[in-house]
Length: 207
Image (cartoon, rainbow, N blue to C red; front, side):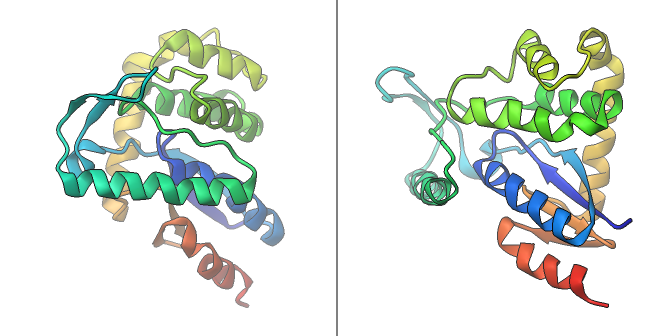
């Protein structure tokens, strides 16, 4: 069976928007999905900022005005797409660390690969409703259990095994040319962005 390797990061709304289309595409063409984490370094290209959760007022910012325009447009765009898909995407108040959530994905793949889709839904949907703290291990354990995955070994898995595995996944991603999410690798060919899915569908349908 062919496999579509798909790199995602929970803090990317574009990755969230890609989940359902990727699943539908792969189901239609009988292709397996290999979900892999990719931890985005957002401050390196969009700067960083922290907002007041109650008022939305900017408390700290290291963004230029140009970067703010890009961020504002990005959220306007993803909300348009989310409304079409019936999803809720609320802007975040800070740039979250998703290293622990990425390790949780690797743990879930090893413990119960058949539960990965349920686990991803248990992460993405509440996070983008501002209902889930990705940086707390006990919260991620709860998401694992919600997906039907035994979370008893997660805390022990995080270090050193989980961190080492994540580092390896990131190194392999960079070797493949990955720089953002969602990114896809099919038959060794790299595609970036949800808008590439029609082209991937053509590749899958080709004799």
